[in-house]
Image (cartoon, rainbow, N blue to C red; front, side, top):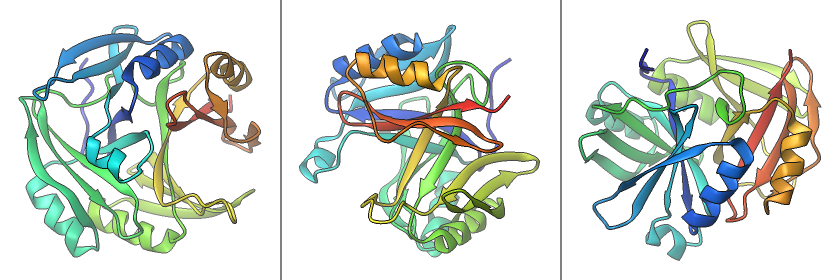
Length: 259
């Protein structure tokens, strides 16, 4: 059965990197992903990561403009949209700034990129022939299980995303401070949290990939040239998590969910 997404669901995850060869070697070695290559109109190559023959994420050369601005390699997060040409003006009304106005991506779909009112970059995706990740929110190594916005303005971010997508927001106290979850119906899709004090972390969307053994993946990532960002930690009722920087400089989270 083909995976489809409703507006507001997190649907695609794409690594922008300065070294696709090093990045693809790292992630395939770490998660057992395979790669499907496709040429891009600009002469570059688009690498789709697959798990058990199903697309789970992708990798592409980082745009020159980003590199010139000093933006490090990073994971891009896409949220599904029913009509991007209607969604983007609404996002602007709610305080977003447009980075890339709506445009077609070959025959695959239509996308746009904005910064939310707190400064975090987020992409929107309107499906034509490619809906997004074919495996999501499932146990298994290397499958997306969560997205998380780190921002100093939790209230502003919550107001923006609930206003744009109709999420239900719920805030509770966690070991590291207040944490807000965004849900559609009975499904939680993402979280919002403050950055650690004096961390210097800018507003940013992060990606968590599910793993069966966090400590084993951290050790393997280190062998493959990655670096843990901080000590592995246990979050009550959530699981055991860590953050890793890949050999090209992009950071992502891993989560071993609580059984």
